Length: 326
Ligand code: SF4
Image 1 (cartoon, protein in one colour):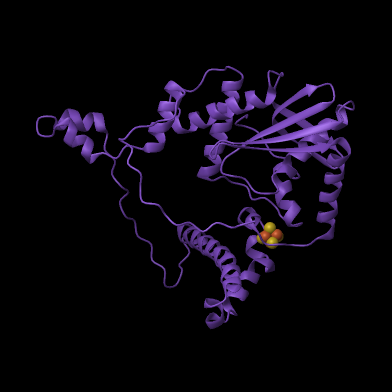
Image 2 (cartoon, helix red, strand yellow):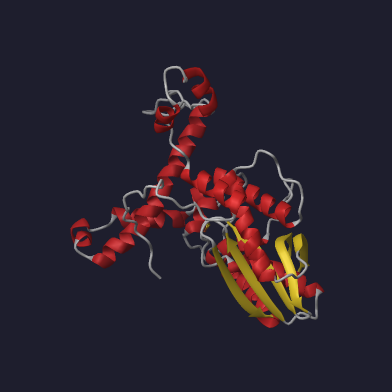
């Protein structure tokens, strides 16, 4: 993935969000999670093309890229992979870059994309866009296989479409957009219309109007309330970010004060040991350190290709997590 890569306003990465809400408009800017994903993509491509790797890579990120490459090798079965293939379409007009493209035979096209996290149910719409642009040029293709490689969860999802189905899905997307219906969802977090969008107020009104006595004893109401409260919690994050932005730009916000607190100090273990070895043994120093288990697992996997195991890994207490059921 090129660092300087630009995005088309109707780029396929917005398509899964447009599938849900016809007015979705992506915001510029980045997040630390997106930057991590970009780095792993880059390592994945560098490993795939046997290019030099940066010396200061993060073990955990590189282990994700290494796993993704092995997964891709399994999928491609030795076929020639085109990395970062630029695709262009004129109707509808867009361009973009497909992570990995190959053909398993003269008539079957494969498009694969690497993702962080566990994805969402509409992510396939993005790859439909890449496939449609490629199909216009490769008229011999009759079948399309789309793959998602999720390097965090070590999952692969595969979707199969006929040539006609790919174009039908593009038409369906355009139809959904033409209907002009807004719908709140995960996409709102990334949408430029968020602040002025009346739809984002719906969950707020519903929470406000909730009959609390009835909700506590009604599992259906509680479940629906959780979804709305999750959305409202994200609104809270948005408000906090806006307040910080206002204060940073010199605006006085009634009732809000800003203060600086010192950041958390970090210890350089090698220098600490050199400085303290007369008074602190290595064993005691290690007791004061907290090894990063994810980094250690990733480093072990990169060096040996094996999972890290051993009775020195003490499992934590199980945590109860709420998860949406389908
Ligand atoms: S903020 Fe509004 S326009 Fe944007 S995705 Fe959400 S519902 Fe759609």
